[in-house]
Length: 352
Ligand SMILES: C[S@@+](CC[C@H](N)C(=O)[O-])C[C@H]1O[C@@H](n2cnc3c(N)ncnc32)[C@H](O)[C@@H]1O
Image (tube, rainbow, N blue to C red; front, side, top):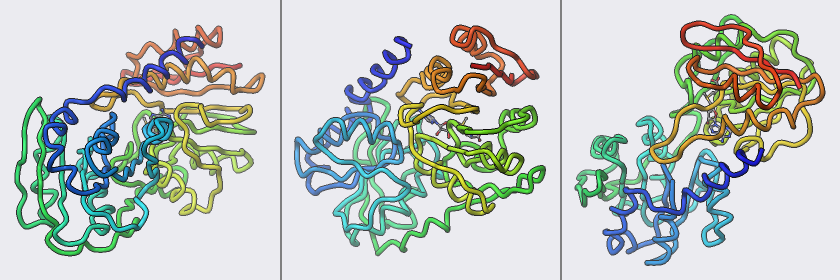
């Protein structure tokens, strides 16, 4: 318990040090601070406050609930959290290159309609994080893209919006794939987990889960695959779906609507926003880090899940076979059952 809380505090503190991308950006504040910018993408530090200290305060749009909470707690800038920025004109854009190129395309499409022709567009990122594709990403919107700076393994590109960008419609960005076993259609959005097909680990977890009832929590719901499949099989369950990513939450809502299902869907960093007790917590939990953020989300879940379960309630988990989760579950629950295993994944269950 103490470890989990300590790790959370550590993760929140992590945003305080500048990333190497922001260190490179801090050499370009004269250019960046000539107008208030809309900043979005892979936000992992205090860069928005640095901009505010050196010029007009930026607008921050983020799809990351943890970052939005951190910036809110900081008090200087109120971020917009959601799947698209609010429709208010803005004088320039700084996109911090997200991990997935498809997400960068989505964010440009969502943000550029807010800019007038001639407004500056900047893309910055780690050289290993795909920033070199900036000229190609901007080619539908800007005639010329220049590399403004490159340092500390990061690059900054600059361009001018050539003509008004087409209006943004979220529906244009939805992809769908069928889950034939359950007669379901899964809706996904760019950059979210298993955006194109069902994950093999999730499939294995769904194959093994049986006899669920009562209040069920789909932790890290992604496109809502697990929760929607369970609702289809066990229509009487009371389902809640949580994720840290606004695009995942939007996709989960779309998946529910597409299949005529109902659940409570809301943002939560780990179990922080969850209330009351559950009969089941089920997850294919997150297992890899952003370029900077290290991950303790799953370890924290394994430590804390028991406190959120009713007596007799169970935790169901799929994880890569090499991860040491069985020991962590045993430490917290006093036991851990391995329900199924293959070379890649293991399915664990523990009862409160
Ligand atoms: C491995 S994916 C599983 C997605 C989905 N359940 C599936 O099986 O396809 C893990 C999910 O956890 C979410 N996630 C990551 N960190 C989180 C956190 N701190 N709190 C809640 N969800 C988180 C990610 O956004 C991602 O959607």
